Length: 204
Image (cartoon, rainbow, N blue to C red):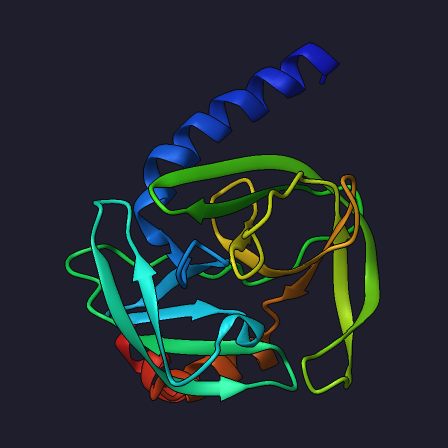
């Protein structure tokens, strides 16, 4: 595939993903201090470090601003699940396999009404970062999709628009770290959401 063909494909995929994913990505907190992603009916996933107490405002693409309630929190993984009225917005889906070095990824975020989608490549895997509890979290991947302020907590997606990670840290203007949504992490998110992994499997 030529470079021109590759970038044309990325541009077309970006346009398609933006239209499909924009409603599922939310802004978290006053002033949009972070982002989040709808993962189930009335369930939003974000970073734990965005929370100041047991409630926080969630801002949707349609202009709604709704108070969300923390129902699941795991500071050791820097993840939190909020219960909030997601109306009829369809949830995003998970990728079964995480990205390898060189994979094309897309990073989505929302600052108030403004949705943002950038693309880049996975530049490293098995990175380590520290949780809000100052505990090391291993297995993160590094990517080059540009992130603006307030992007952490937003999803990292593959070419099919499936969630492969959750942005955690913007290391510089060029690199960011994301928590991969591995089987173990998805199971933990399901527990925090009040839905067991077995129950989700039975729905398929």
